[in-house]
Image 1 (tube, rainbow, N blue to C red):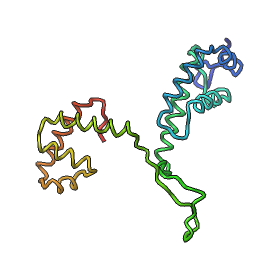
Image 2: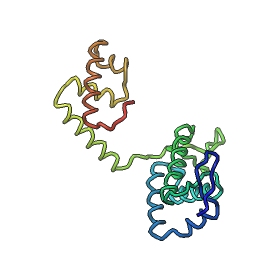
Image 3: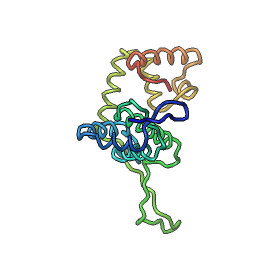
Image 4: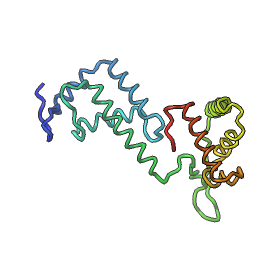
Length: 196
């Protein structure tokens, strides 16, 4: 291959070399790429695995993204798809659109003359079962400690800080001590959990 240097001096494939690398893909390579794409776009409502794979190839072939020389094509595709999926997640998080609300264009509110909005349930039975399993595991880990159980219930109800402290009737010192104990206990349950 006759790779060309990019702006930083690293060698990258030309358009013809990219075409050749993609044509050389076997059915197994495409299957792996599709599996990677499906995994990377999990949880992104506006993007399917096929869309993600297509967008990655388009950006590579239009030379919006570089294809480094001597890097396996699946690695290159995976890196480009990861970047696109990451950007889509950031865009969704910043979007003012609530995916749980749908407009019914055929049901018009006669007084206001615009489509009616309806919420949609996004919690599946599997989600409910998983949540129940997590609660059972949490209470088992708390080992009957009433203060920690009360604080966990307050947090589960969405109360934090002064609101939780007031609801529990605790002073600053007690709330802070119990919060730290519960946080440590939760960290032991799930060391990979990121604190919020």
